[in-house]
Amino acid sequence: MKKTTWRGLAALVAVPVIMLAGCGSSSSGAPADDGTAAACTKGEQPDVNCDGKVVVGVMSPGDTNDKGYYQGFVDEGRAFAESKGWSTIVIDKINPADGANQAKNLCRQHADLIAIGASELKDSLVATSDPSCAGVQWYIATTAPLEQTDAFVQSNDFPDEQAVAAGYAAGLLLKERSGTAAGYISGPELEFAKVGAKGFLAGLRLVVPDATLVETYTGDFDDSAKAKEAAQTQIGKGVQVIWPYLGGATDAVVSLANETDVLTLTPGGNRCDDPTVKYDVSVIYQPGAYFAAALKEFEQGKLEMGTTRTWRIGVDPVPTVIMCEPHTALQPEVDKVMKEIGDGTIDVDAEIAKASN
Image (cartoon, rainbow, N blue to C red; front, side, top):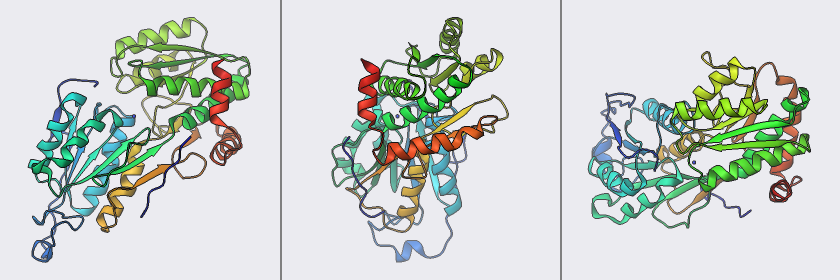
């Protein structure tokens, strides 16, 4: 796997929902009147346009109320912005074909930084050269490195590593039940979703060599009815653990699993203590944690355009896998495998290839 470093420091719905400051789930804070505008030099972070306020625009292809991957990106960014008195403008459910137009819309609203929450919207970066976006700083969270230019900062991770670690954790649970069948439910049959399934199976087989994986692609990350139907079919086939690699439809699967004593994993966030549904494993790879780190650099004027930061499981605090109650006694085994993935003792590519044959 190609690895990159950061020097200096995952087309779902066609109609975008714009949440402006003070509306819906967006947030804003009035910047302190401390003479910043008068002392400002254009181009300096964080008030790059010298208008006396800091505005962070956030773009997402998914539902930012999905309690998962997409929401995590927005929540982390909003929390940091609020703590600094900055304003946020969030646009979600963006069709990738409309990404560039939505980015220009944020530029016209005087955004100082535009953050793109998933690589599905990578083509939005063409707006970096639009006159309306002159001087704007750009950040994108990706699942695989983009060709780097001086116009943006990117952070990425390795979904295959995370999937293998998730599979290993699920394999431990299967082993405790003397089971072999697991399920994987996702939306459209996109490349990153298929990568997740392959890695998950490889991780399962590190613990249960004869493990099998039932894969279902519903075509929609947020359609709860389709996801629940898929889960019901998989449970009927005897799966004892399901990874819902979904967005807004995740909890529909987990609720059904809870009712039928099937174990589950989260698709991105830590929900071990969730009061509404019960998860057995939290697979944490939310880009929000990476975004928060970038915003801290942005505040300090150290977010360097043209750079890349790659986050590694078993090396960095996130991504990671956490065993929820009552499975916490298994955490040391999971920690050991994550470390071995991070230092290369476990060859993820080789394990995936072996499981795929």
